[in-house]
Amino acid sequence: MSGNGKSMNLTLHVWRQKNASDKGRFVTYQAKSVSPDMSFLEMLDVVNEQLTEKGEEPIAFDHDCREGICGTCSLAVNGRAHGPRTRTTACQLHMRTFRDGDTLVIEPWRAKAFPVVKDLIVDRSAVDGIIAAGGFVSMQAGSAPDGNALPVPKTDAELAMDAAACIGCGACVAACPNASAMLFTAAKVSQLALLPQGQPERYIRVRKMVAAMDEAGFGNCTNHGECEAACPKGIKLDVIARMNRDFLKATLMGTEESQGGGGAG
Image (cartoon, rainbow, N blue to C red; front, side):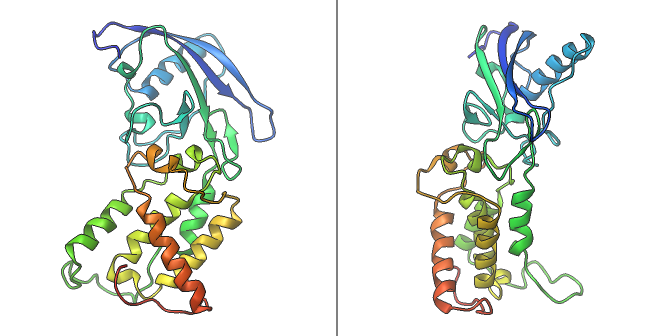
């Protein structure tokens, strides 16, 4: 790592693609005088400014909060989703992670369900479709109940919060050899299955969300575990096991109208 505060010169091999139908290619750029205190996206900003000054088209990449919360930044660095640091999104990745003279290969998520829009930007609306299928709870309209009106065991509350940490970035899909969205889907299923509010639609929800995942073109889970390693929020494979249990129970019930109930499981 570059910890001496000196600027670095890097070689970037960046994926450039005009649209989903374009074949695409890697283009080489030189990133000069890069401060180790820059974030990865700030480095791309500097490169884009240099390209603009030359009259060339800047590199298109997704970004929003730049704080590791929104899940918008979706790029792989040297074959690893979000880059080499664990539990770190690309926008939180600092250039001191790399050394002067390093060569970086930057490309978008690679998955059938995530078609490339342009350069490093992919269309991740497929994960929105999974949420729309069942990632919610239905309740009567009216004023919000008191926060402590429904007691929740501390363990269940903590597990639900762990699952709810998912930012929907899609790194799990990009890292999986099968391009599976099981970790994402299971996290969204688990955060509701662990809470009282999610019990009435628990088994309807898991069937609908798994069906939406399959329809979107995501692959199957074969327990490689790459998703857990790539997840910037450290979500565990345990959520997949919980979703599989719920899905099996829902299937044995034999009807989509089967209602939830019982413990958090």
